[in-house]
Length: 315
Ligand code: NAP
Image 1 (cartoon, helix red, strand yellow):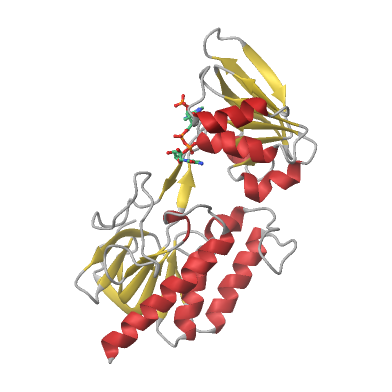
Image 2: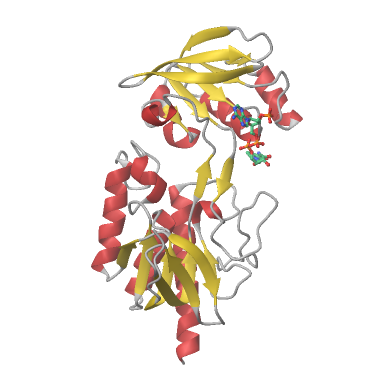
């Protein structure tokens, strides 16, 4: 799709990624009367656009992810935010006050400051039925979706910290939680393992992988294979949470942006990265929890820091 257009579009603040963090940064940038753009490759809202129901965003007891995303985008647009559909393939810093997002369309989006919020991606199982049943019982976020599976049998795939911690959290809802792990030993820290072993609601299926996820309108069962004996079986479940790794989408960012050992961007309290004038917010940033609420907070700080920087530069 990359074209040699060499076209440049100039803004005050260029925001890469239109999730809740990016849209909030856009709202604050536009409200400060700066020419602000969000560049998003899919739909404004990012991951939340595909979330069936959001019930942990203050002020909305129940709202679909798509509706919340649309409300956020419309709200920011009322203040003059421009939202452009394009895929950013590279981010460059060309001096203190020239930040460039290279679009797959061939357009270079040039800003005096930039906010990067490209989010992160869950590692998928990559088995038949997974894609079709995502949002219909297959999930990658226990905090977001756990409460929908009250008193049901919940499967959790993975053996790392995320899988075991989230399995413990899911025991608040499920009648039982079954951890399916491909080895006979967990990767998770011992202290987390012990908590899971003590939990009466958690069971384990060892040495096993999910080969297929079955269901039509919603998930019904999993086809499992024991990797030691090659024995196959079917497990009836009401939900399947997959936690086999999550990676921040930093591939498009310059190497000078510091990341922690898991690859998440390290910022200061103004959300500024190690490149002055480039700020980060949302799931791509190092933080304790990845929620809409903290992405929104990050976006506010990042945009205001960018506004102050641009004002200081214009003085
Ligand atoms: P992780 O540590 O990489 O663990 C991934 C787990 O999924 C492993 O048990 C792995 O099995 C399994 N797995 C990978 N690919 C698979 C596949 N295709 N099919 C079935 N199983 C598969 O990932 P994570 O748990 O998401 O954690 C990511 C990082 O965040 C880690 O550094 C972790 O320590 C950190 N983290 C920390 C905390 C905490 O400190 N409280 C909480 C969450 C995450 P194998 O064990 O056989 O490789």
